[in-house]
Length: 52
Image 1 (cartoon, helix red, strand yellow):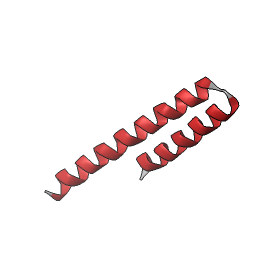
Image 2: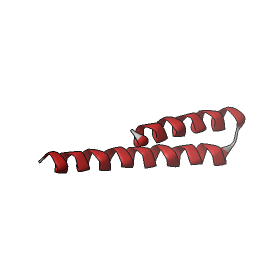
Image 3: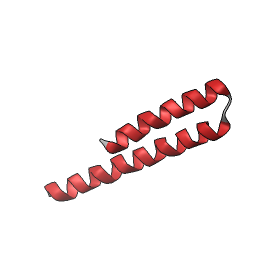
């Protein structure tokens, strides 16, 4: 769930960054989205291994 929260946070940062023309905030949002997706993927792999 932490990864999903990071993805949502990243999307919000991107939207705000675009709205106010802040490229740095937009880039931070993209980084948060990627980090969240990676966390979700790792969590899914860990669940698969644990359940095996």
